[in-house]
Structure formats: C-alpha cells, structure tokens
Length: 304
Image (tube, rainbow, N blue to C red; front, side, top):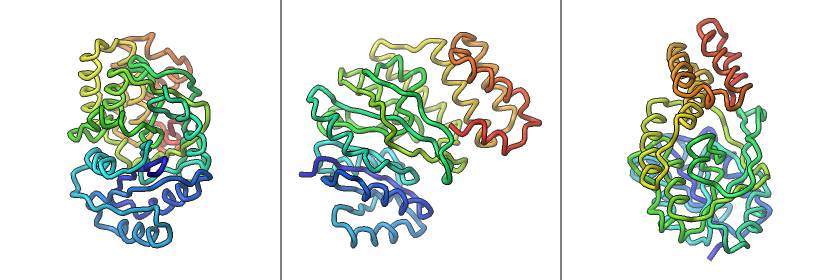
C-alpha cells in the first residue's frame, strides 16, 4: 500500500499533462502512485500518459466516460490504494518537496486533511503567491477568501474522503468548495501549512473562466454550509463577488460583467468588499475602467 495516491483527472490536456506528471515523478518522497483518469479525451492525452506508464510503473491510466472532473476524481479515488489521497489538475505542477512535507504533516494522527500555499503562474513565470495560512480551516473561512485555492492543493486521508461521500458530480465549478464544507462540517480537521507546494496555472481557457458555473457551484456550497448552521454572510458574499470580478477582468469577460459584479459586491457589503483595501480598490477601479483598459494590463493585474 503506497503512502499517497495522486488522483489526476484530465480531458484534452495534451499541451500540459506531461509537465504535470514530470513534477509528480520528481517528488523527493517516492512512496506514491498516480491514477490518471482520462475523462474522454479526443487529443493525444492518453498516448502521452501511456508512454509515462512504460517509464514508471507507479503511474496508471484509467479510462473514464467523459462525465466531468468530479466523477473522474471519484472514480480515481475508488481505485486508489494509498493511505492519503492527493488531487492534481492536469495543467498544474507540484513543488518537488510537496509529498515529503505532507508525509510529516500526516504523522499527526489528528490531521484529517491538509493544504499549503499556492504559486500562481501563467506557464512562464510566477505572478503571485497565496497568503500564508496556519491553523485549522473553518466553514466561515471557506465561504470568504477560501485559502485552499485549488484542489491541486488538497491532501486528505482516504477514510475521510470516503466518509464525506466524495465530490458532487453535478458540479463543474466550486465542487472543491462544496466538498470541503462537507468535510469541515462533519467535524474533520483540515489544516494549513505555510509552505508553497503547488504551482497553479492561470489561464483564460481553464474551467475557472466559466463565471456561470462558478455562481452555480457557489449556490450549492452555500446550501451545504447552511445545513451545517453556516448560512453565509453579506461580507462573505461581497468577498466572493470581488473574486468573480477579478476573474472576469482576467479572462476578458465583457466589461459589463465585471462592472455588475463589482457594484453588486460593494452594494451587498462595502466592508466585505474592502476587507482587503488594496484589492477592493484596485478591483473596483479596474471594473469601472474596464471598457478602456487594455486586455494585457487586465491579465497582468489580475493573474490570481
């Protein structure tokens, strides 16, 4: 039984998946397996992955029906043999000491899941780092800034994942948020580690550019939080709308969308919108000037 099982769902990821797998193979901690779940790719993804399985027997390729990333992750988790499950998206990279760090973290039997810090990169260079977080994650934190940032940053004991019933396959965005709320709501302890462990690729072509799916996933997460006695607050919603406005600016959505999100956030809770004064002011100013702001400058300002 390996210490870690890494679940890597993919769909038409031929351009990035080899770089992702190489970052996993480069881990200094070597007791792991990778389950690559090909979710109905029509490009060279499967062929690229198959070649890596010949070079490293710890890598397995699993065919899936093309029903979305949540179902693919659940399928990979069901076939995993490791004590701890980790997730990685097919366009992200791990720092080579990630598993060594997590191995030490999970020596504490009272840690049920863990995450680190994230470096946001555009494929060429790192543009920003997520804020440090140390301590135990709460539902209120998840509804606000959500320091986890991405599923590529999550490790969870296998029995905890099974107890949580996995990801909601109806969601294609914020499925990680909804699932984390369930994990924390059940009573499991999720901790942050003050180490950069993941390089998260920012791309206008990624799933995270789909604002409609993000909003639907958010509504599902709020319903789950309410079941655990955390209905969410106006402040939390304003912070989330600020995040969506920044994402709209970064991916080149219509300027009216960024303006609408910014004004809605300021109206719902000015204190929430400006909980980070610099970020709130910069996002509001950019949304208002979006019709004349060059797209390249938008991407530079809102890379994360």
